[in-house]
Amino acid sequence: MISVWKPTSEKNTIIYPKCEVLVCPNNIYGIMNKGVSGEIARKGGNLYQEVKRVIRSKNDWKIGDIFITEPFRFNRRSVSKLYHIILTKYPNEIISLDIIDSSITSLLKLAVKNKMKSIAFSPFGIEYFEPSILAKRMLTPCENFNHLIDVKIISKNEYFVNIVENYINGK
Image: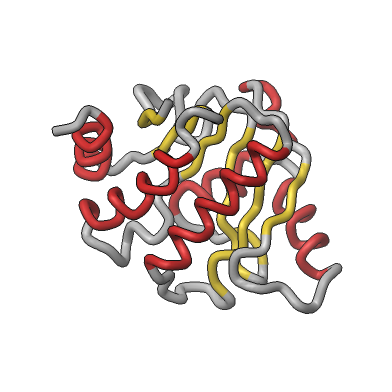
């Protein structure tokens, strides 16, 4: 099942959907500091330091590489793992639609392989693309895994949320 998750109050923040896997976009220097990634970094306890340690432990990160960490403070919301994906080399670098498509496919394949039942991620690159184009590109790979894993798209952007909900509902 594909669904949208959005906050309904200050306490019910964007980064607390109930899911087994929460995806945190990164660049080769660490957690991206804007949007959902920034919130994950700020509320994740020692997460930021752990991601820095993991990233520094390897010299040849490539776009699309994934690594997994413990959930840190997110285990309170049934998150069992954080999946980190390298989306860009440098901060503020524009992400291509092909990278978004292949990254989502890789994340879903890994989650299914690891027998996870649910995964949540934010719209990658929402600041660079028209929301309807981004929504379609994000949801297409999700549909291929719809029968294997529950997918939650998490966003505060009302316009994007409406587009995703309409797409899911066939409008």
